[in-house]
Length: 212
Ligand SMILES: [Fe+2]
Image (tube, rainbow, N blue to C red):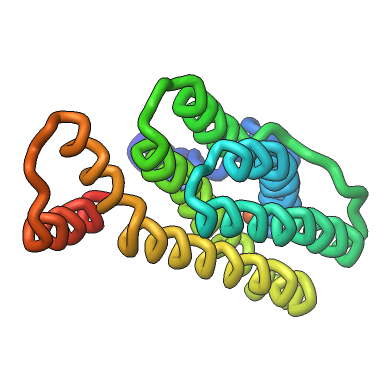
């Protein structure tokens, strides 16, 4: 084999060799799916704790109840993952989900801030939506892996959770758009002693909704 050909063949197999050496867990799509399940299992467990804190901190009743409802859903999502592990003949276990860990840490920093209640609610929605978007991406990927592997029961379980995450994300957007963002602008104007016409409030509502 000439030197150039040798170089080419190394290049072709290089990425696979690198991924093999990174983790023995991920040398097949099935093992990669199990790896994702472990990551999500840790993510959901962290979110069970975090959602309780968000519900406690939220001031608007509808937001509080949205967090409480999603907390109950999240507990059930943990159960679904346990069922998925069982179907795949695996013991339920976690690997550290650094993505959600970082998002939760950011959320906890918000909780330490001294903020107006409406502004705090807007910040809590933003923090929760970051977690939802992470989960939507992760469950979407895991669903595709399960489908590719012909694991239809696992795919259905993950798909149910994916739908709940999407619904929660939409509900949070609706809450932000319908009152939280506008109220946080109102609060700011009152604090500054600025006038607040009806027209201006509507405009602020639209601008703020676009921002979140
Ligand atoms: Fe979740």
